[in-house]
Length: 106
Image (cartoon, rainbow, N blue to C red; front, side):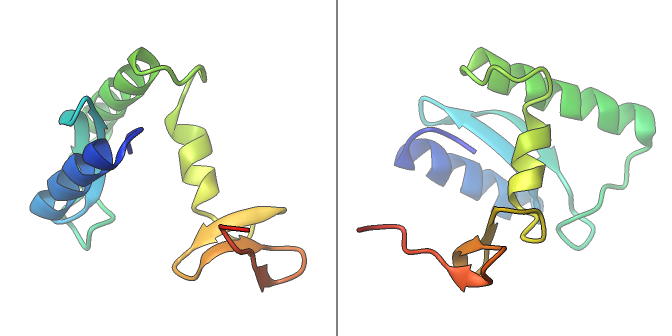
């Protein structure tokens, strides 16, 4: 996650290096990350460690301007293409109700 192409490249690099996970970048550098090395989706850490690491991500995103109490929540929800009305998928933006891809540019 990030606000610019430079931020997104830094975050993507961190996630790739970790074998999966979540990273947040600001001003071109990763400020918080949650490696998920088991299949790119799961963590080897226990609950307490996961809560602490997710807290650091939430803190970094709030410091970067996200105004949600738990910024990861809406981000996780965006990736669920079954939640109406729109979802982000490997095919791009999808209108879930109509089951159609939505063009990103007019």
